[in-house]
Length: 498
Image 1 (cartoon, one colour):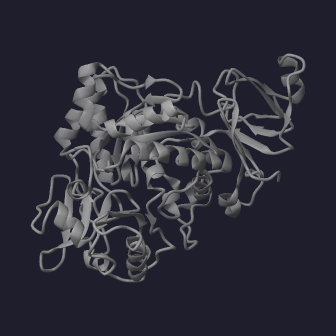
Image 2 (spheres, rainbow, N blue to C red; image 1 turned 90 degrees about the vertical axis):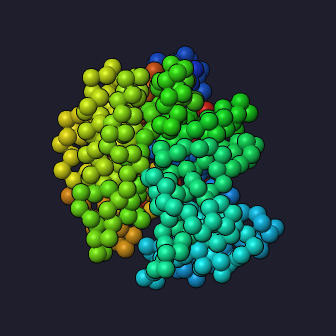
Image 3 (cartoon, rainbow, N blue to C red; image 1 turned 120 degrees about the vertical axis):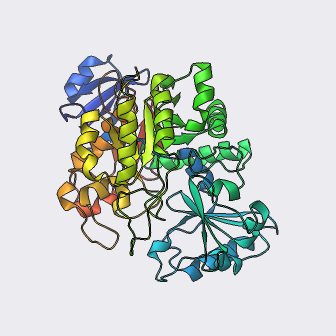
């Protein structure tokens, strides 16, 4: 049993406790030190928490875990490490010098909106770094990529037309400038799964061993920040094979719920499979679909043109009738659906599709992934019981953030420069932690076993070095994890005793 703690249970009452006991990987008792002692056999070992604060294990309802784990070996071009076009060229050139000619140079995290230049970086900026290697630089949104001339030559040539659901950007003379938006990425990137126009293709060529090794690295990184469960929101046969092999080898050490991408809907329907399906470590959850693109890059669909001069109108992966048909089929087969939608026009289209299919027997609590700008659709979201799975970290910046960064962003609601944004919508620390625990579990139909510290639930919890509930709001992002417990076992312990 664990005693002498300050334990926020995240139960329906928001209760606090001093101690907890674990049996067979589940919480066996929660309450005062005396009550928990009385509930367990005499002589049960006690571990003192030393007054530290405990919360349930963090549940990330939208996290491309395998992709993130694999990309930990990629070149990091995130801001502020890369803060200009010249920085980008320099970092890519340094990486290219370490690879044989002809081998791909892959980078991630490009956020050119932070650069001082008023123009987009282009393929010619990457060509300054190397013409001997194909170069792929993924945008921080995950929906766009910048490639060099060698990559274009290998994959599409100079005259590639725009695919359905995507676009190749061009310069004033009509030449491809290296930017591949949304579905256009699939035509350029070395991928191993054809997803058609069902979403951005992030299913890159990689050996299964490489992916499984990445899961081991990613598991350690995720546990160190308190993540015990993630929902991977775009899974194909490639990802599921890696997760299964990782579990077989013991390198997958966190719980994963997989959202299969909609290009597999017909095949899954033929087998009779619909989520939830699986066990507490690896499961199939909602069906993933895409409506529009990303806020950055102008492919999110809004009712009114946007951009500095109204130059963006967005793009759909599916026209309304096609999306409606896919959603209807999924609901009819018993799926919970999660649909990527950023702009208000796209969100309305998704709600139309869900409402039209509401007569089907699927369990409710359908999801809209990101829900960047719901506009006038908030009341409708609530009426239909649709869960917006948002990322508060977007308020501060883009990138791969830890749970406490998202919690801090939800509480502080300030941009990287310190500008307040929607302060009246700020969450309390309790609300933000609930969003990352019990509310996230609810979006996965898993609140009966995850997301709170209650008797009978899986024994996942996080111990903080410093009490985040007592920290000044502006310091929340610095809250450090002292230990992470999953399935009743200490899976991560900080390197010192502080």
